[in-house]
Length: 606
Image 1 (spheres, one colour):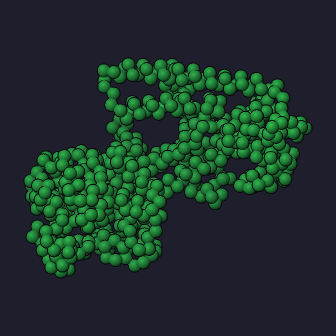
Image 2 (cartoon, one colour):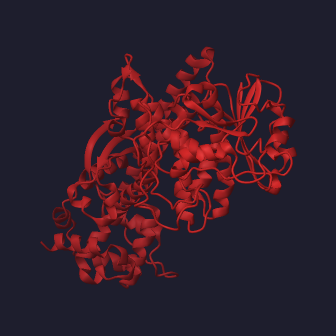
Image 3 (cartoon, rainbow, N blue to C red):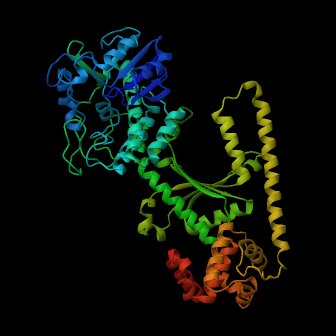
C-alpha cells in the first residue's frame, strides 16, 4: 500500500508537488512536476498496486456559481482559523469541463468515490484545515505568498510547517520524512532561501507531503476524519476539528486584513494559540519542540558566535567551531526512549539537554583540556564527561570526546546581545581532529548503515584497531608539537631586509620562543596581531624583541588571573596592552573589542 500526495497546480504548466509514502509512512518519493505527462511518469511505479491518493484540487464540480456545498460546510468550521476553502464552480475556466484532478485520477485508475473500498482510490484533500487539526494551530501558518508578507515572514512560517511535519515521526499514524534525501535538501532550501521564488518551489512539495499524510490519516483513523460533502456535489476529506477548539485571537496580528481562506497576517511562528490536541505526553513534547525550534536555531547561532569569540580572545588554537539544533525527528526519537519499559524522560523538553549542540575540534589533546578550562572560566559548567577516559578505564579503545554542558553565568546573562541564551543550555563536544574523524566514520557506518550480522565481529575489531591507532597518532602529534616548541626557545629574531613586515610564520616561531609555556594559536590570528603591530609601527622581529624585553610576563599572568592556558597570540596581546595602554585600545584593528580591552587594561593597572 502506498499513500500519494498531489498538490495540483491551478495552471496546466505551473509546478505540481508530488509525494509518496510507503505502507509504514516513510517518504519514498518527492518531486515537483509541470505537466500531466510528467506527473503520470513520476507516479508510474505506483500505478498498479493498492494506493490512496490525496489530491489538493477539486475532483467533482457540478455547480455553475458560488461555493460547492462541501466548501460552505468546511468554511463554517475552519474559516475562523483562516483555513476556509476557495470556491470552485463551472463558471471558472479551469472547472468548465472535467476538472484536471479528475482527469489525472482517471489516468491513474483511481476510484474517486470517498466511500469506496477499492484498492486504488483518490480523494480530494485540503492541507490548510489539516494543519490546524494535526498541529494544534490557532490559525494557519502564513507560508503562502500574499501581499504584505515579506521573505523573512514566509520563510519562518514555512520552516515551522517543515518542523511540524518532521514531528509526525511519533504521531499516530506516523510519517517519517527526514530519512529521505530529497526532504532533507528541501528543508535546507527553506532554511537558506534568499528569494520568495525559492520558497514557492519548496511550498508545493511540502503541501504534497501533507496531502499524502492526510490520505494515510484518513485510512488509519476514519473515526477521526470528516468528509464534507459527497460524490454527487463534491467533497473534501480532512482530519476532524476537535470539539471545543477555538481560533487564536487576532490581537497580535499585523498586516492587511485577511481574506476568508488564508490571507490572515503572519502570526509569530512556533507559538500555538490553543492547547495541543494530543493526549500523548511524548507527542505533545515533540509538537512543542517543533514550535520552538526556529527560536532554538537562532540561539544555536548565538552560542557559536559566543564560544568562537571566547576561543579567539583566549588565543587557543582550534580547527573548527560548529553548531546544530537538534532535528525534530532526532528529538522525537530520544523523547520516545524507554528504560525497562518506562519512559526515559518524564519531561523531555527540560530533560533533553542537547537540543543545542556545539562541537569544537582542536588539533592536539592538550588543546582539548585548554578549551574545557576556558569554558569553565567563562561560562557555567553543568556537566563534564570525558568519554575517552571512561572508555580507557574500561580497558577499551573507541569513542573519545569531552562532553560539556554549559550555560551563561550571571555576568553574561545580562548582556542584551545574549538575550536568546538566557535559560538555554548548550551541549558542547570537544575533540581532536582524529577523534572527530573516527567518531563521524563510525557513526555513519555503524548507526546509519546496515551491517550484516556475519561481518559485525570483524568490523568491531577493525573499529577498535583504528581507534587504538588514532589514539597513538594523537599522542605523537602532541609530542611533535612540544618538541617543535622546545626547539624554538633559543631562536633569536632575525630581520628580513627584503620585507620589514613580520610574517605570520616568523611571528609564530618568535612567540614560541618568547612564551614557552603557551600553546600555538590559529594561523590567521598571527596574521591579525601582525597587523596590529604594523599599526604600532613595529615592522620587524628585532623591534618586537626590544619592545618586549622589559615586559614582566609573570606579573601580567598574575594580574590577568588566567584560569586556562592562553595561546601565544593572547599572551602577546596582553603584553602589548601592558606596554601601550589606551593607545593600543584605540587601534583601528581593535575597534570591535575596545570594551573588552578596557576591562583587561583595568586588571593590568590594578
